[in-house]
Image (cartoon, rainbow, N blue to C red):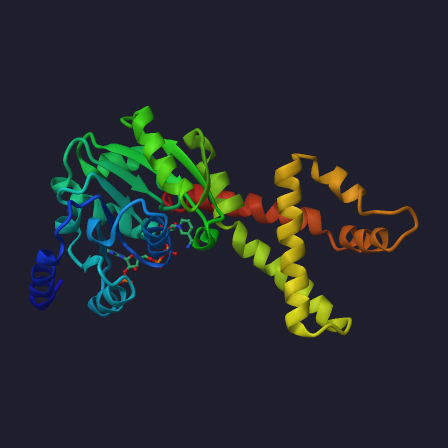
Length: 287
Ligand SMILES: NC(=O)c1ccc[n+]([C@@H]2O[C@H](COP(=O)([O-])OP(=O)(O)OC[C@H]3O[C@@H](n4cnc5c(N)ncnc54)[C@H](OP(=O)(O)O)[C@@H]3O)[C@@H](O)[C@H]2O)c1
């Protein structure tokens, strides 16, 4: 970090008047989605949040986007005195960041990491002290209040730390507390899941275009159908096979499409995508 950047940060600090509630370290795509969600849902005010990024030009752009939130490139000053530190850097940047902020963290700090592949004990070890570590795996639908987040406790996290984390993430969607052994699978299924779903959405819309529908209409039909089907499964709790059978009239149209899906190996392709992504999440920090 240059001395010019340090000067910018010291200039920015006095803007914060309210007590700091959360520091978001590595406020990129996911960090910003979450922070904006927490702000929109009234969990904290802009004056109670601090965010960090690595590069000065991004700092300036983010400070404009989040006008009112202190944005800095100094992780240590951001973390200092924050009761909750949310870490949202890429897994590879995590060890260095943890060693940098470790000395600034108080023993009672709740450290929440959303980094894929990185275990709570790894985080604890690199922080170098017994803070309360919780891991969370949200997804991008947090942007519209429809996230799915898996949460697990580290060795020193207590029930109240899990509950506080759950409350934060429930402000942007659903959240479930799980055993840490499930986090890599959750990373694949719901963390990466939106990417797979958007490929399905794009393909359905493209198919609509190929059978003559205007693109915008085809995209709306496909998106609302995915949304409605997911809502139906969630709200009825019925098995997906039962819901599928309700659409499939004997000798009707739907069965013809289903046969094509089987021929194309859709099910096994989706299963393999999740299995491969889980394996990648398992090996990422061990590679
Ligand atoms: N994207 C998702 O859908 C998703 C979902 C769940 C979890 N996650 C997890 O969220 C994390 C971030 O993913 P992302 O997609 O949001 O990536 P991203 O957009 O690249 O954000 C990472 C941010 O970290 C900042 N950064 C890097 N090193 C830093 C340092 N030493 N100090 C302060 N800031 C630093 C970068 O700043 P600059 O921009 O200045 O370089 C960047 O803004 C990953 O660990 C990922 O596994 C992502």
